[in-house]
Image (cartoon, rainbow, N blue to C red; front, side, top):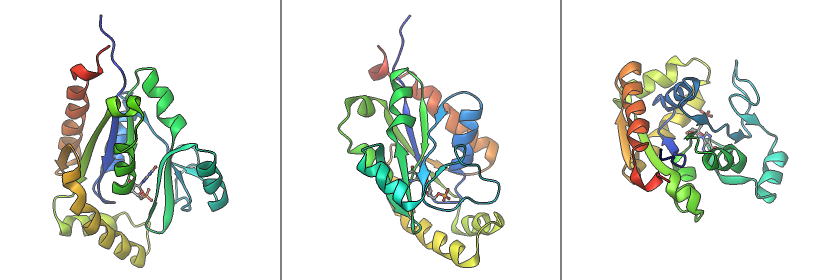
Length: 198
Ligand code: 5GP
């Protein structure tokens, strides 16, 4: 029997593309570990500290950067977000796949990281909404954000989408089920990669 090292799947795409739902479902089905990020933004209604994010005050976030605990970090929509090394490295070492919901700046930092474990593990996907109209409908339909926040997210989304060609894979969103089928196919195929076999 051959074992393999874990996959680190970075998933980016604008808010409303459905990427978080895809990542969460993969983790809920036991296919991968979902890397819980740190953020300085306030929790939305229903979000739980330690499950959705590690919600931190700015000074705590800065302290973690100073202590070298973050693999990457970036400012998105006026708040800080970052990945704890402990959410990634320990799992990969055990051969466990890790899925990360991450913005384009964070993904660029992970791609340029020199850690050989990360480089072997890495693959990345950009999830695109079917159209601008549908994206606006999804951002508005969530009903949790104020109008000016939606406008800011829409503006950022259009900028973020210009980076799709930096990624190895692109998923053009259609329906939840079809998106998930394609998403899961990607991780199944990545598990066959010879470069990660031990
Ligand atoms: P939200 O506030 O809607 O949960 O997330 C806003 C953005 O932050 C999304 O594009 C999401 O992918 C990104 N994000 C979430 N966690 C991280 C992280 O750990 N690092 C970086 N760079 N971006 C993140």
